[in-house]
Image 1 (spheres, rainbow, N blue to C red):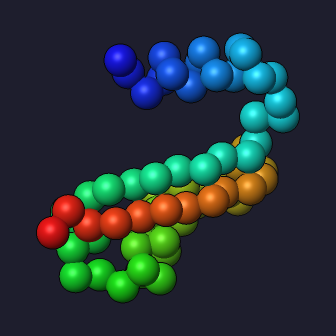
Image 2 (cartoon, helix red, strand yellow):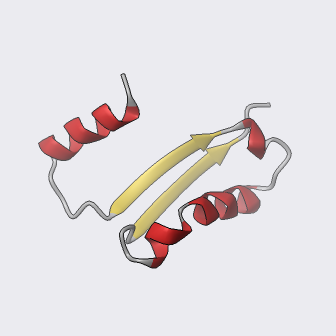
Length: 66
């Protein structure tokens, strides 16, 4: 099942403001990278929606694959 499908089903069942998100990112790009730098990379990737207010709150969990 695609992540977009899961997101759509949950958004339909639990409507809200749509600007609060919790993400978990697991990537080999995080191997050997400090937790702070992992979170910075996620924030950098989402810089535009964070800046324009599309994302009001973002809770981040990250980890490498090693």
